Length: 300
Image 1 (cartoon, rainbow, N blue to C red):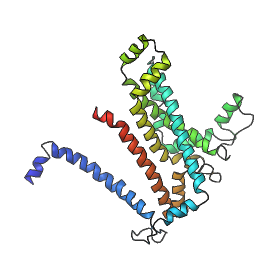
Image 2 (cartoon, rainbow, N blue to C red; image 1 turned 90 degrees about the vertical axis):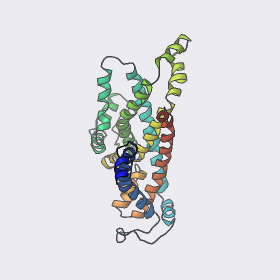
Image 3 (spheres, one colour; image 1 turned 45 degrees about the horizontal axis):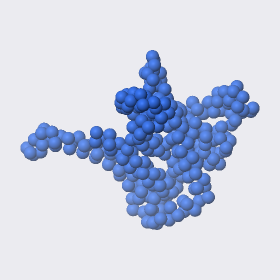
Image 4 (tube, rainbow, N blue to C red; image 1 turned 45 degrees about the vertical axis):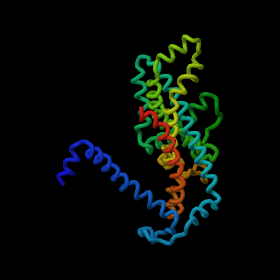
């Protein structure tokens, strides 16, 4: 016991303790439920056996049944469109805003802080606000489009199958743009000014400096932002619950909302767990990309 007490005060033991406590917390609250979810995807689960860990083992039957459903591939296609369009929109607009505020004009820091409002707002609140804005009868989005001459009649964003998914994409882009802007601003501020001055003396224009200096120097930051964007977008649930509820007729349904719907509305816990396991694989892939992107920064 004396050796243990001394190890906690010599620095090394205390460091191990600081790592062990949060690691144990994560294993208890995240690791065990994750393993339980994976286990359910290989079992036959119903309302009567939900509270038991020992259930009939069915192997890959849940996965085969899931991919045999006619709505599976359209929903996965919606998920791919939602993730790709959301990440692209957030990154492009966020990068543009980061470059804009990089000029550092008077009041830039205050104005940049206002953009964080979208990031700190809860998803359900953002969904409620965009639910009103996208209303087909009195929504401000239709008003602005009509005034700009882009449409001649109202678009029913939430109930039209052609626009329902894009309605959620617009809300998600608005929600995540400020996060991209802040992280990209940090990456831009780490680039030495001497590089731009030398390139300008050599006759490089703005575009050439952006392609040959800015993008290569921000490669690790961009990789980290894109991987984090993939993780956050695959976790996005609140906007679908607040705006479209996956409708109409699964036109805006995505994997994460479908997993919740199967588990807690249709009580098909096995298929809900199966979808979650598939999504976990994509999240793990994004996590690997994130770790590889930030490895150089951590070593530095």
